[in-house]
Length: 430
Image 1: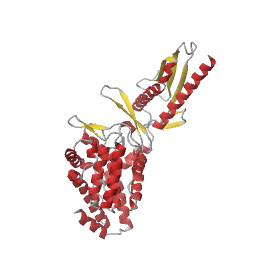
Image 2: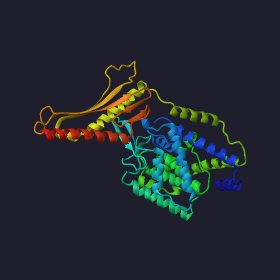
Image 3: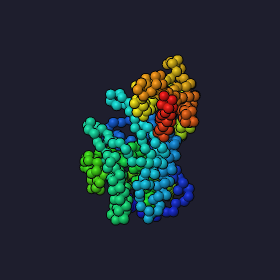
Image 4: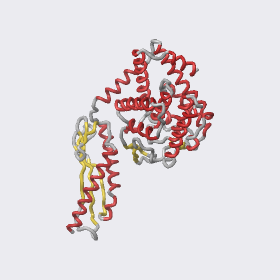
């Protein structure tokens, strides 16, 4: 069926400019809508894979919707440009660059463990993962992806296999795209964004062969999950085996992706004939996209929930700073860092004022420092109506966004330098 539809699609080339425009707009509508449609968190393997496929970023660290759409559009143009050069092989560098384009910068994800202890990790844009990632299956078992140590080699294998498969010409474009996607997901090379990259690379492969690109629709999630689960059973749970899965093991997923391509081809043929390609729910999709854009463009006003959320984030930062200056305990019995907020704040008001992260070292080691010597440094955070400022960095953040990993690192570096300079001055004057 795909071959027949593809030949029919080719016979209708070139498209009239107005038909091409309508088709491009339709694809971008579907792409943006489905990439942002799925919400909520999940613990099961299948649900988590679905979120990865459709591009949800974890918890409060997620990007603004408008910025995410822009990043998707840039990434789409990147894969079209890259795939247009038929002689140019796929490279790991391109995949990492694509990932950096989507995420734009490093950021921190905060989580609470089962014992309610807070912890965090950094999502690195454009870099392979530095920590293990896994999910819990519906039966309570842990399903592991490739380890950080084996990921580089497996990604090299994947890209080498793909380029050789293109040269051999044995697999059809949709078979090649489906196998590549499955192998990639089983490696899970990045800390976040793996599903979006997999989806983009599927379209990179199709575009390379002059096929229409596809959109995996969120309303198809049940069939998608079923196809993936069947493949997982056939392939097994060992990550390195999954990263080298064979076509014969992936029939359910190849069939699913083939169905997506057939839908895309039918849509393209209708557009090429000048027929109506608008679907019944397109109006609602456009409304939702516009709503997301307006929410992203309209500044968020500080409220109690955001105030509580930011307090939690800055307390986490204070704990991290305390860890990073811990070596000072060689000179001081007490090395501390904590967040201090206005004491007059109550549940009925939202503070538009200042909070402080105070780093202090006191109770000096009498064998090394004079009595009463103390180190101290404060980081001010100014809360306004629509944004908060960190004067130390000369940075302003809109509410709903967190301090970036890069800026956190800069703050830690400054604190350490200032405290070390104070300590050096004390020891010189002893």
